[in-house]
Image 1 (cartoon, rainbow, N blue to C red):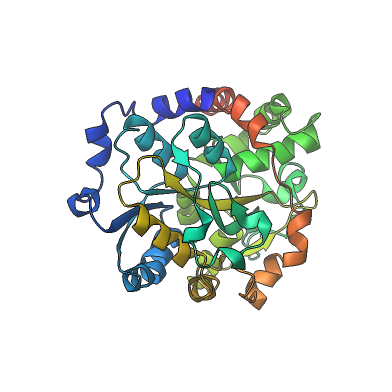
Image 2 (tube, rainbow, N blue to C red):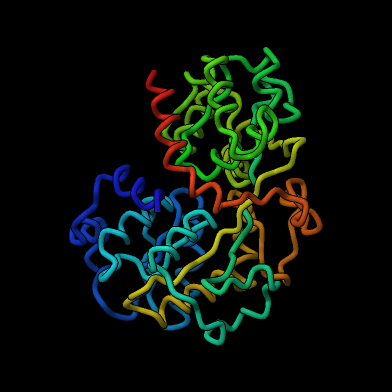
Length: 346
C-alpha cells in the first residue's frame, strides 16, 4: 500500500528490528507475564499508565505503556513483523486498515474479555474493542477570537487571519478536517486540489503549519495561536491547565474516529494483552478516564456521561457524527502528504 511505503520513508526507514525494539525498556522487551501496550503520548499515556496498570496488576500481570503515535507504532512493527516491539497497538480506522493489509494484527477471542458484553455491538471490533470515540472539531481561545461556525469561517473571516494553526496529512485529526474542507470548497472529500488552492490563496495559513497537535497545544498555551483542529480530549486537557479553550462542532458536522486496541500478530504476552484490553473497557477504568483532564468518551454502556462530555457530544449524537472513508483516505494519503509538504516548504 502507498501508506506502507510512506510510513517507512517518513519514519526513518526502520529496517532493523533491533533498532525499533531498542526504543523500549529492556524489561518491557523480555518475554514474560507483562503486556507492552502502545498508547498515544500525553493524556493517553498518562491515563493508561495511571488507571490501567493497577487493574492489570490485580489480574496477575504487569503492564508497560509505551508512548507512540499510531504512525510510529506502524513503522516499528513493520520494521520487525516477526518480533514485534508491542503486544498491543492503539489505532484509529486509518492505521488499522494498514495494519490489516500488512498482516500486523490478529482477530481477537472475545471470550477472553469479561467486559465484552458491556460494549454495544458497534464497539465490538473483530480486531479489538473500541475504547473511546474521538470527536474532532475546532479549538479556539474566546479571549482572542470569536466563536467560529465552522471551517469556512477560518478562511473567510478576517478575525482569524494569522491565528490558525494546521498540521500535515500524516495527522488523523488534520486529514479528517481536510476532507471536510474539501467538501466545502471542492467537489467532495477527496478533492484536495481545492484544499491546496485554498492554502495557496491564503498563505498566512501556511505559516501556521506545525508538525503535531502536541506542538499546537504548546503554541496555544503560549498565546501564539488562537485556533487549531483538535479532539475534545485536547480541549479538556487545556481546560484542566486553567487555559481559556472552547470546542466547536463545525456546522458541517464533527469528524469522528473510534479508537481500538489491537492484538499484534506474534504478540509475546497474549494473556497479559487480554487482561489489558479487558481493563480498558471495564466500568472502573472508564469511570476514571471520563473525568478531567482526559474526558474520554466511554464505550462501556454502564458508564454514565459527565456533563463535560455531554457538552461535547451525547450518545444520541454518535450516529450523526461524520465518519470518514478511510479506504479513500489511505489510497490517496501518501500523495497528499507529499504535495502538502512541498506546498509548506514553498
